[in-house]
Image (cartoon, rainbow, N blue to C red; front, side):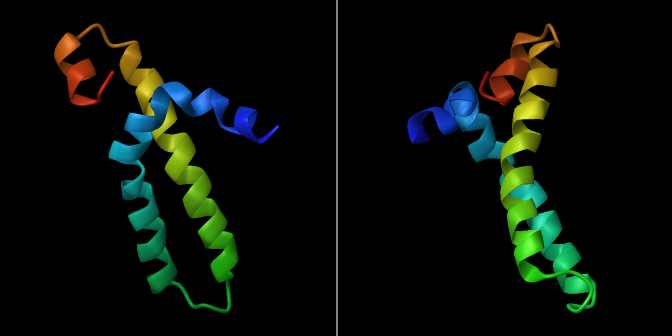
Length: 77
């Protein structure tokens, strides 16, 4: 079961590597700006992981639809 858990991300590992840090940094900034009693650390930690995986995959799927080889190369597609 575990090997198949991330099988759908196999084609997008480079995009996750390239783009995953930006939403994670954004969530960290949000965490420093809000009072800590309103949102738990673990909620934002889990959100950081999920957004860091899914947002780059979404961006890569959108960029695949653009017919520009230069843009594809910039995003590792």
